[in-house]
Amino acid sequence: MSKENIPYKIYLSEDELPKQWYNVRADMKKKPAPLLNPATGKPVTAKELGAVFCDELVKQELDDTTPYIDIPEEILGFYKMYRPSPLVRAYCLEKALDTPAKIYYKFEGNNTSGSHKLNSAIAQAYYAKKQGLKGVTTETGAGQWGTALSMACSYFDLDCKVYMVKVSYEQKPFRREVMRTYGASVTPSPSMTTEVGKKILAEFPDTNGSLGCAISEAVEAATTSEGYRYVLGSVLSQVLLHQTVIGLETKTAMDKYGIKPDVIIGCAGGGSNLGGLIAPFMGEKLRGEANYKIVAVEPASCPSLTRGVYAYDFCDTGKVCPLQKMYTLGSGFMPSANHAGGLRYHGMSSILSELYDQGLMEATSVEQTAVFEAAQKFARVEGILPAPESSHAIKAAIDEALKCKETGEEKTILFGLTGTGYFDMYAYAAYNDGKMSDYIPTDEELQKSIANLPKID
Image (cartoon, rainbow, N blue to C red; front, side, top):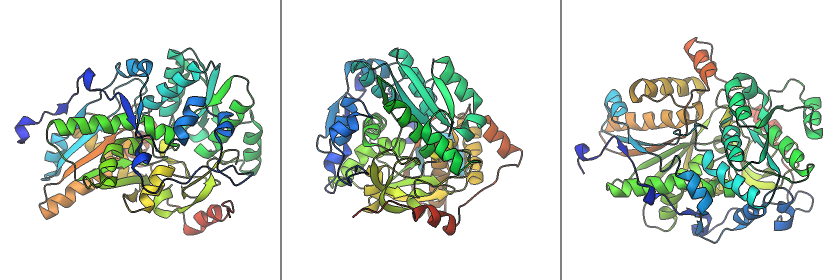
C-alpha cells in the first residue's frame, strides 16, 4: 500500500476492541517455570497464592494452557473510555532521520494515568471488588502504575495503599499528588511503617529504594490487613495477559492496512508493556506462521536481561514473595537513582525470560543520556513528550532506522510508546541543564547481589 493511503493515525472502531486477552503461554512448547514456595521449594498452590492475590487473578496466573480468556463486560466498558488507542505512523521522525524505514508506534498515553498501566489496573481492581475486598496494596516505581491503580480503585470504590520507591517519590511529587487526588495513600519506600521496611533500612540506611523493596512492603501490608490483597503492575503472567490488548489492537490495525512489522521494540523493566505489545506477534512466531525480530530495551543501570543470570530468585528484596525463575540481578540489587523509575526492577517476567532464553527475542541496554537525547529528538518532531521508560524504545527504534539509512533497507519498525513524560520534568531539566550522568554497575557490584541467589535443588 502506498504511503499516501496510510494515515498518520490508525484508529480502530469501538467494535474492534479485543473481547478476549491472549495467553501466549498456551502456544509455548516449553512453558515458563512455575513459581516456587521458598519454604518448601515446591510449586506454589492456588491456596497459597490466594492469601496474597485475588482468587480470579490466581487462576489467571496459574493457567498456561487456555489461549484466550474473556474480558468481563465491566472491564470492556471501562476500556471504551480510552481504547482502542491509536497506532501512529511516525512520518515526521522518518523525515528527520532521512531513513527509508517505516516507523510506527502504539501510543498508550491517552488516559489520565498517562500510560499503558491502566489496562491491568482496572482488571485487578475489578476482580478485587468482585471478591468483596475492602482494598488493595501495591508498589510503584515511576508512579504510572500507582496512578493507574488509584484511578481504578476510585472507579470501584476500593481503598488503595501505594508504596512508592523513595527516589521517585522525591523526584516526581506530581505523580504522588495525582494518586492522592484519586484517594490513594502514598508512602515512600522503604519506610518505617512495615517490619520489612525497617529491616531494609537497617541494612541499607541511605538507600534510594527499589521496586523490590516496595513490593515487600506492599505484600506485608496486604497480608496483615483484613480484607486486602496485593496487586502489581508488571512481572507476573496475569499482568502481561491484561496488557495483550495493546498487541491485539496493534495487529488488527496493521492487518487492516496490510502492514507487517520487521522489527518490534519495547522498553523492558518487569516486562508488562513489552509482553503485551509482542504477544500476538510472538504467538505467530511460536506457531511457525511468521517471523519477527523482537527487541527488549533496558537501562544500562539495571540490565537484568543483558547482564543478569537465568535462575530462581525472590521477586522482592524482603524475600517474602514466591521464587520466580527469571533473568535477575539478584533481589538485593539496588539500582542507581536513574530517571526511568519504571525500569528499576531487578528481574524480568518469567514469560519474557523464557522466550529470551529460547532465542525468540533479543535484548539490548542503553544509557540514560542517550535515551533522553532520543526523547528530545522525538518530542521535537512528533509532538509528544515521551516518558523516560518509553524513550528507551525510541532510542532503539532510531538506531534501527539509521541502520536502514546506511544499508538502504526499507524495514518496517514498530515500537511501544507506553506513556507521556509530563510528570518527569525534573528528569528533562537534569538533561537540559547538563546535570544528567550515566551509571553502569560494575561486574563486581552485580556479582555481589547475584551471589546471594537462593539455592534451589
